[in-house]
Amino acid sequence: MKGKKMLALAVLVTGIAFVGCKEEKKEETAAPTEQVATPEVETTPTADTSETSLDWAGTYEGTLPGANSDIKTTVVLNQDKTFAKTSIYVDKKAGEKFEEKGTFTWNAEGTIVTLKAEGGEAVQYKVQEGSLLQLDQEGKEITGDMAKLYELKKK
Image 1: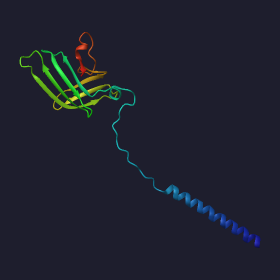
Image 2: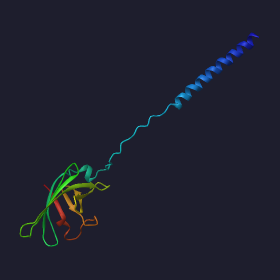
Image 3: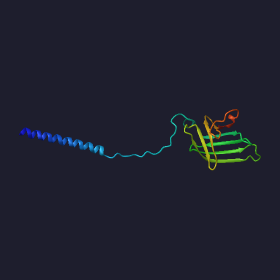
Image 4: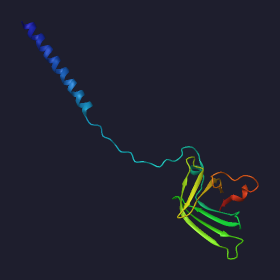
């Protein structure tokens, strides 16, 4: 009889230990997981691009061809993605002057900026080492003999 009591006691102790372990695991898995909100971050290209590897902020100047007059153009790109653009028509009597301000954005590849003036049309420039190359209305490089005439040099 003593052997049966010992066996029953051993089974009881084992059962209690087993239940205790199971309950511990339940508590671990039942504990709520804390959700941490991740802020949305503006993505920047990870490879070397004009945006990430060139010193692009600054003043660019040049004389661009126009339909009726050459246009002395100055573009200032600021680090905070704002710009100022001044255009002076060279061949006009009074030297008509136009000033625009606004913001610009980079394309996904980090090579082209699109300047959007307040109330004006968007203009695209390819950012190169020491210069901006004005692109056509479709965002393509101007080719041929006149291509170099659309370049603004950094000052």
